[in-house]
Amino acid sequence: MLAVSQETKPVVSNGNGVEINSFHIAQQQLDNVAERLNLDPGIHARLRQPKRTLEVAIPTKMDDGSVRVFTGYRVQHSLDRGPAKGGLRYHPDVTLDEVKALSMWMTWKSAVVDIPFGGGKGGIIVDPKQLSKGEIERMTRRFAIELAPIIGPEMDIPAPDVNTTPQIMGWFMDGYSSLMGRRVTAIVTGKPLEVGGSLGRTEATGRGVTISVREVARRMNLDLQAAPAVIQGFGNVGRYAAALLQQECGTKTVAVSDTSGGVYNPHGLNVADLVRLKEEGGRVADYKDGDRVSNEELLELPCTVLIPSALENQITAQNAGRIQAKLIAEGANGPTTPAADTILHERGIVNVPDILANAGGVTVSYFEWQQGLRHEYWTLEEVNAKLERFLSRAVANVWERYQQEQVDMRMAAYMVAVRRVADAIHNCGTAY
Ligand code: GLU
Image (cartoon, rainbow, N blue to C red):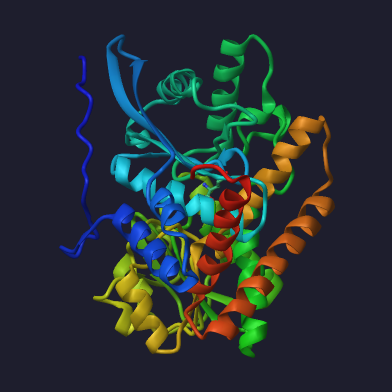
């Protein structure tokens, strides 16, 4: 069978019949901050668009001998502060506009934590759950080859994202290295330890969520001891956030979910058991010790801390009025729409935005990249201590803006980040 390249879908729905385009949201967020910062119109216009976009066909030999051609993208939004950096997503709903939005958000994320990267993102329109391990490996190797003209350790460094694992990063690195005729470990981050990965990278995003929640809660005088926490999504972000929040901040995880739905127990869930269940290939919906809730219901449960760590556009104008959390930290990228942001802010709910809350992953990716380039291995203590420093500093910078400007925390984070990127462009004196 020869599959035809799939059409890109410019607009997606959030499942409630609301049409939401993430790229338009990203542009709107930039427009709002540009006005506040009185941004140079040329720099603003430049940053509304990605710098470079590549669409590739990825012919892949399937186990039955047929060839399927998948569509993949890599978008580099900005290289102004350093090489593009950001993950690769394997998902059936990937669209070019989604990848463009995600690449723009990566630019702001690297800037807000002040690491020397620009923003990039990639993806393949595919449901990896329908492919065998061998098929995913061959597709990934071919993807690396197709992206080779625009990626490189000093140019653009991919990483894991939704449905992509350290193993996939290992195949990607090997595919690229074969083409180059030498081992290029710094081409990708989030690799397995054995091939140049960093200690602490796997749990880094969840650890970063924990640090940002702790730091913001402290400034809000919000007591987290035994405070109920609700986690949407139980992938690489959600499961570590659930465990580490409990361990380091004393919260009590009362609800978690995955694509199968959620489970709620006001007395607390056993996170270790849930992690084990998932590792054995089970679904959250199979967990017995709690009540079944849908992903939508889960967001509206009574709690102190809410961590949306699944996909985009989960908190919308429809449900923002019913959210009961006091503090939200966006483990996912883009889970809240601008209309929902306004409602949350008016209701006094603090929402720590994705570019800050989930920046732990890319920060440890930066450490992994440095280790690769310098041929070093850092200890877990070193990695975690540095992560702690970078994220605490970023929270302090954003909080200062937040206090000064009396805006919501996303706007404050954007003001810090966009200013840094604009200054980089300005100081190079380039024609944008
Ligand atoms: N995909 C992750 C993110 O959205 C990590 C990116 C990276 O490590 O480069 O931040």
